[in-house]
Image 1 (cartoon, protein in one colour):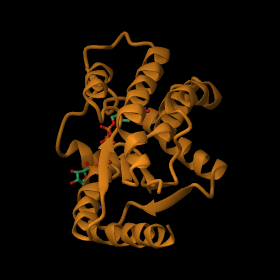
Image 2 (tube, helix red, strand yellow):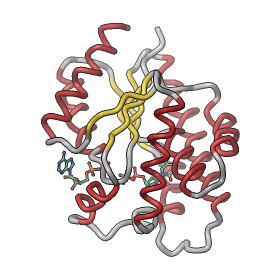
Image 3 (cartoon, rainbow, N blue to C red):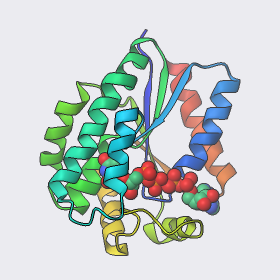
Length: 208
Ligand code: ADP
Ligand code: TYD
């Protein structure tokens, strides 16, 4: 049996890591075989690439290089971890995947959704999420939450206009793929959001 591939998307600081931690605890307690992973990164090679992409000193990085590095990290992630796990029947939950590249590089950087999608199709070898949860929250609120705790990496330091483009990009993707993307109201309290996610995940797991 093939496993289930769930991806989590949303602006920086939308609460993805917080909820993934809770979900991990919940699903492990229920006895499911689950792989929690993230992008960019998820493999040793991917984590090296992540460091290059997010390094504040890399101010000269071209948008095309950035898009290819994210896709390179993803290619390694798919072939080394995601594909083998799904083939073994594991539930794979991934913090960001292709939708992040479509939105951040394709829309916010202005490279184009189609162009970014093309390089990613090469990277993912036909592996697509069964469902994507989009954490819907304005960048103003999300970044305020995040900056309370750190100064921000290279991407988080982009100005608010960039993050607004990211947010609007997600809304556009949701319009383009209404059946694949489920919106979660990420402005709620941690527990309210978690209950909503549990409902969605439980119904996916009982369906399969
Ligand atoms: P992401 O992984 O999407 O960047 P995090 O889970 O790291 O987001 O959350 C960003 C910050 O917001 C953290 O400081 C976290 O404690 C806080 N946070 C997460 N969820 C909520 C919430 N529902 N309400 C208020 N603060 C939150
Ligand atoms: P991450 O550490 O997951 O950020 P956060 O926890 O704030 O959500 O991701 C690092 C940054 O990389 C984040 O700003 C989003 C960006 N990103 C892209 O621009 N393109 C991509 O394909 C991916 C996966 C991430």
